[in-house]
Image (cartoon, rainbow, N blue to C red):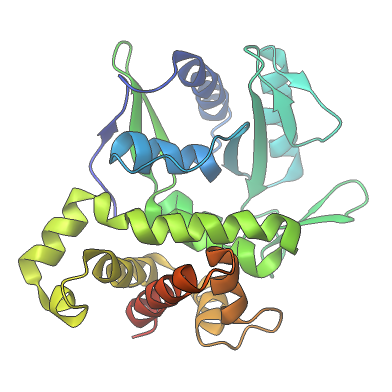
Length: 282
């Protein structure tokens, strides 16, 4: 579900806007679709766009690039370097001219049938890019500057939720923990979006179902909206997790990692996941 244009130009750091402008210009020049993902997307949309409490600071800015081949990825990387970005030891990490770090994440036709990207030359570094297509297809347009206008595609809350669920099922615990916390944040802040809260109070069915608990009703609505944009391959992975049939990890583990193992948080997050699952699976 696409939201109207979000104008956060009065709130965003001009240095971040300038960085995004360079990446946008390079991507457009090479006809490479892209979007902003990760914590920067979360903050742009939910904090600056809809007033949700900021969660935690993030050091780098993640750009997902829909590229057909590794040559296309390399071409964009070299174009950024020509625009004074600096290389690092990691091929997907660059440092912008204003010293902000960025990650460039490839997805699209270069992925295999399991939506895995194997980094050349050895192919020993493998990244799961399932869900990035849905995030691109349903990105929010965010205005970072009014004059001259700078609009960029940013992952929507629905797209972010897909990416967080897939990442959590795929990664090891050292990285997975923040995915669980981010998912909890998405479930508890979806109600901040006016079109969502207005819809829930207008139709009232879900509000009545959850005893007028707006957060739980919003989590259910998020499940519905995520299902509507999810492609079949992605749907199967998320449905298996929510049905407790994931081959690697059980749903209880996700709730534990969302909750920092406190009993009170566990009960609330269990209710949120149950509400989301009810929306997604039914």
